[in-house]
Structures are given as C-alpha cells and as structure tokens.
Length: 424
Ligand code: GLU
Image 1: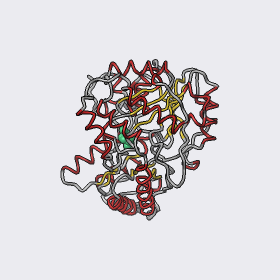
Image 2 (image 1 turned 60 degrees about the vertical axis):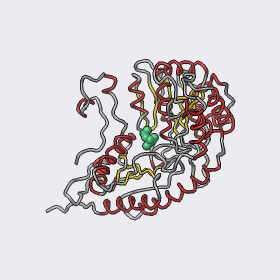
Image 3 (image 1 turned 90 degrees about the vertical axis):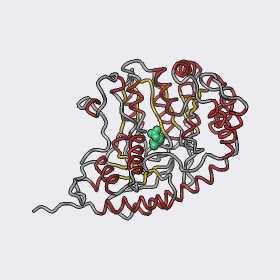
Image 4 (image 1 turned 90 degrees about the horizontal axis):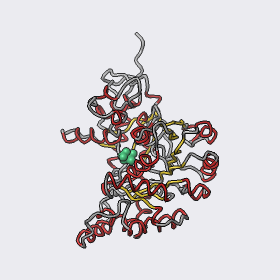
C-alpha cells in the first residue's frame, strides 16, 4: 500500500517526499497541509471523471449569507479598497472587541486585538513573534494538522502529549505538568477540538490553567475557531471565562471561517496582551501587510450582525452527524462515537488493520486505509496520522446529507470487504 500521508521525521527527511533540496531547511521541516493535500487529490480525481466524494476538508457547504456578501459589495463600492492598519481596521477591531465582550466576558481595547488572513495566520504570527530557536510548544494529540508544522517552521519544538479516546480525548493536567519545561513558551488548547470534537469542561480548563500559571514562561494559545459548533446541548466554555487569572498570558484565537461559512474570505482574529499584539502586528506588516479590506468589512457584518442563522445551521449539522454515525455503526470495523462539537467524526479503525482489501493490498495503517478508501471506494477522508494519532480516520460531515450518507455507505462497504487472509 502507498501511504496517503506520512509525516517527515529525522529518519526520513522531507526531501524523501519530493521536496527539492534547493528549498530552505525551514521549509523542508514542514509538509503541505495534509487536509488541503488530500482535498486537492480528491479534486484532481473528480476532474478526471471519478465520482469521488470528499469528506476531507473542514469547510461548510453552506453559502456565505447574503447580508455578509452585500456588506462586502457595499464596502468595495464605497472605496474601502485600500491598505488598512496591519492588524485590522478600526471597524473590525471594534466588532471583535464587542464579540469577546459578549461571548467571553472579556473587555479588550483595540490595542489588544489582532486581525489576520485566517486563524492559521493568527497562529503563525503569534509563533513568529515569540519563538526563539529551541523554544517549546506543548500540543495535545490528536491535534489540528498545522500546529506542529507552524511551530517547526518558526524554529520551535513541538512537545506532543497524547490523549486517549477512552477518556474522551481530554488532556490530563498531570501529563501537562510533566511536559512543561523552562523552554515552554506556549501551551495550545483547542476546544471544541479538531479532529475529535471534544469539548473541554470548564473545570478541566481551570485545572490546566493552574498548572500553566505556575510556569511563568508559558502562555496559552486558546484556539476557539469551533466555538459556536456544539451539539446535544453541550456548551463551549471560553478559556478566559474558565481561567480569568490567565487573561494576560492568553491569546484567544478564532475567526469567521467555520461559523459563517467564510473559509475563502480568510479572516481570523485574536485577543491578547498588548506587547504580544504589537509583536504580531510587526510580523503581519512585513508579510501580508493586512487582511483583505473587503473581507474585513464582510467579517464585521458576520460578527456584529444577526446570529440566528447559527442555530439553524447547527440543527442541520447535528442531523447530518447523526445520520453519518448511524450508517458508520453498520460495520464492526469502525469504532465511532458522537462528537460533542466541531464537525468531524474521528473513527477508530484499529479493527481494519492487518486485513486485506479485495485487490490483495494489505491495510497496515490508517494512511493505507485512507488511500484504499480514496482509490477503491471513491471517498476522501484524512488519516489519523495527520493529526498525530493512529489508527483513526477523520470524516467531515459538512456536505449535503444524501451525499454524506452515500459516502458513509461506501466507507462501510469498503470496510466490510476487508478480510483476514486464511493461512494456507
Ligand atoms: N481547518 C480545516 C480542516 O482541518 C481546513 C483545512 C486546514 O486548513 O487544515 O480541515
């Protein structure tokens, strides 16, 4: 089997994956984002005529609401088409300040707000602004595919702590205590979590905060991009609400992509202490310059305008999630549980390993399984290894329900067709 996704290690330098040795050492430490790479492969196969259904990307299929598009149109016609302040124009900073006041109980000045081209760039700016070579960033696995690469690109060292599905993928404060060192600059917290959907309870956030508070070099990057996406009455607790005493040592990052179906507009934002916001603005001013002015105007409408659509979208997503779970339960080879938030099912595929596909290929890893699903079942999903946890596959339930159902049926059929080969 060809692996669909492998992470470069010291033993297997990135050049082995086709990166030219003319590329910098820094860029050879990272890989193409696996979520984007797999979605890209699905797109190529589709344009070649294959009926591939992609469950790879975390991107809502809903249209950006018309009132948001109209706000962008109006801004463009009114000439809001020039450079803005590097880390965001006053209107979006004010909308973000109001959002943090409303949702997080955080009162922040404009000099404590950063706006960039997506939450990914917010995180990059924070790391580029703070990491010196060898500085450590503690990350809980399964983690979002870009965290470790962003850290390594910025010369830092990712210190990964595994969490377990047996415990709902919740982090263990004593494991965190053991992982902290004099070099720790950041601890990343991501709730609701990509890829597991776990929502960290308030008491756990407070416990994690206490561990970090005693470690003065460490800051928290609380990635809350899925903050509005919680199911079954679960509620997301903002980190700064659970741990108010950590306010000056926390960067809360979020954005409009996931909540308002605005992935392409590329607007992320963050709130943090002024020294950090200053440092991040320098990075932004020397790289992107500023996030797109027209997209900023659209984001103001998204953040400050009517929020009722979120409830409707959540109902649709919850229905899709339940349908997908019901279908996936039809194979004993997948272990699935209902995610509390975000929009991914993180299925345990250990029962598939060691089995043979009908074409004779043997499934030895989650990456083999994802490759098999793509090439033989016409479904794109992301293997757990991309999130630092195996053997799993991540299934995004962000596509239209009947298509999602069809994709899940294909996964079930493909899994049920895997056989243990009889010894002869
Ligand atoms: N965050 C989304 C995902 O995990 C979008 C793609 C990406 O940037 O990784 O699928």
